[in-house]
Length: 116
Image 1 (cartoon, helix red, strand yellow):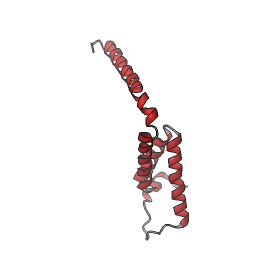
Image 2 (cartoon, rainbow, N blue to C red):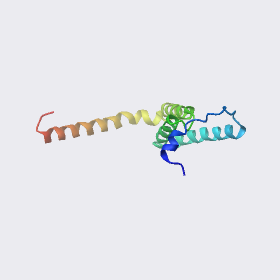
Image 3 (cartoon, rainbow, N blue to C red):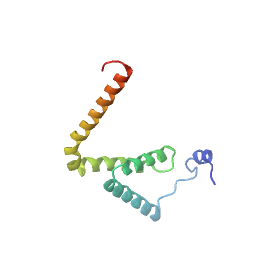
Image 4 (cartoon, helix red, strand yellow):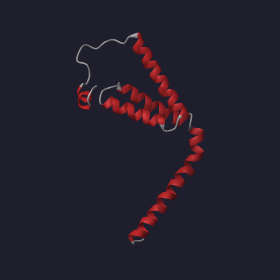
């Protein structure tokens, strides 16, 4: 079992860089396909996936390109394919959020004894 400090201290291999084999290329293609499928079929899961990949890239466990690909794919999907849904509902959803924030601000100001 690897302890947490040992996990973070390992870093990248110090030996010569190995060339990609067919199995590594296949695994990369499968991972990129999974990222694309998740981004297309879920709402919050792609953001969690991209954030997790970014965290793993920061501690050098995965190539940063995977996190970049995930973020770019999510943004592209949201701007292009999800635009017909997001555009009509965006104003209504942000309006609901704005009203909720104003209402909470008035309640907090009333409880504090001051006027907004």
